[in-house]
Length: 160
Image (cartoon, rainbow, N blue to C red):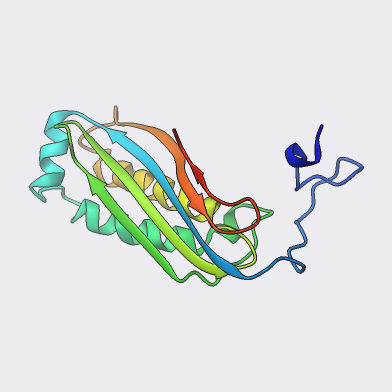
């Protein structure tokens, strides 16, 4: 295995470890992630018309996603706790049966925010499911992935 493909959270004996970032430069780092929730058209209409019994689904899900990004290091064992500069959650509703979620997370730190961005869209999607499950248990959460990231030693990544 080349140095470039080395697993950074595993030591030479195969034990899990938190990566030492003390030697890294503090730089601006940005990560964007995506998730999708597919549902029945009737459920989509309930959300868009704000007629879900539990309240404003997209508003509550946005807050849940932001909160989740801030709590990522408490959920993912080897993540460093970070003082995030910004977390944005946006929705795209191109169909009548799905909501696409995008998060953008920014930090000025020694390590990136990919996991924070992925956690944000994941919890946002889970919150949509939770708030609408009484109307539609067949909802599908899918397409959770890193769209792109910038900053740090590894530079820029953009999904093709």
